[in-house]
Image 1: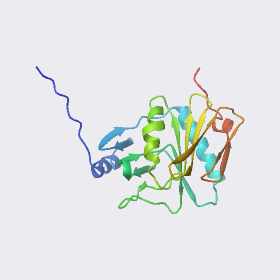
Image 2 (image 1 turned 60 degrees about the vertical axis):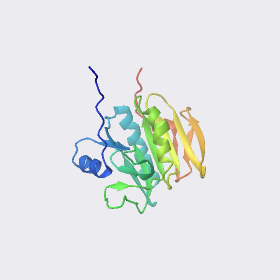
Image 3 (image 1 turned 90 degrees about the horizontal axis):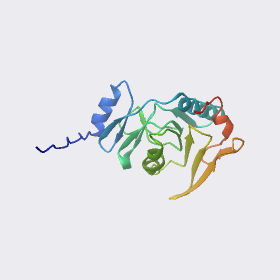
Image 4 (image 1 turned 180 degrees about the vertical axis):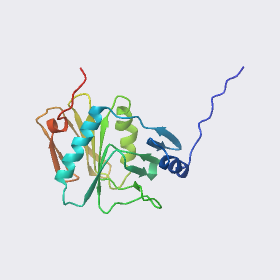
Length: 193
């Protein structure tokens, strides 16, 4: 007896959007596949919330919008819909043609790393983000230990990598007027022992 693997259904972006708008949970869309997004840990949410609050204070009165977790981003070059943990987007917002709920022009994205997504966030997702013309800066924030990786675009196809482990060090972004002490990102975060 021969067992054949069941072929995965390939969805169009339109089918994904119809499905997503009516869903109770969020999904990413990657090259025709609809992938459910798992819920975050309290530490994950605490870090994203702290970063969001600090960005809001720092960017008050400046021409930026800040989004956390529930704002869909479309990356046309990779046929990818995703929900970054934190995004800073210059105003006016650029929206996907024909959509009011999907943006396309982030300048800075931060992802809080989990055990299940850290490789994807560092590799395929960062590669996809780099195809966005407005994208200038990427933060990868570890939720299990004090550690942040910063990638800053300096020129077309050139990025500078900076790593932070000292709680007293400051992260300064080059894409927006923002600076934060590493210890402040992790305020109230209880690491697993």
